[in-house]
Length: 58
Image 1 (cartoon, one colour):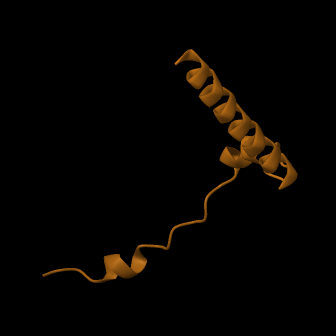
Image 2 (cartoon, rainbow, N blue to C red; image 1 turned 180 degrees about the vertical axis):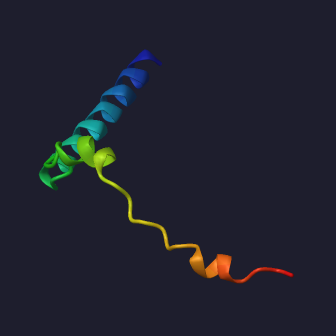
């Protein structure tokens, strides 16, 4: 049973290593600067609510 578990863990480790290598080759980790400063950028301004405030219920 222990040989089966060791084989499974080695297989899973190779799968994760392959996924990591694939991510690096496809450019997943190229831009490390932009995500860190994305919070500093302002969001787009929401549409003004002037149109909604013009119609009042009597």
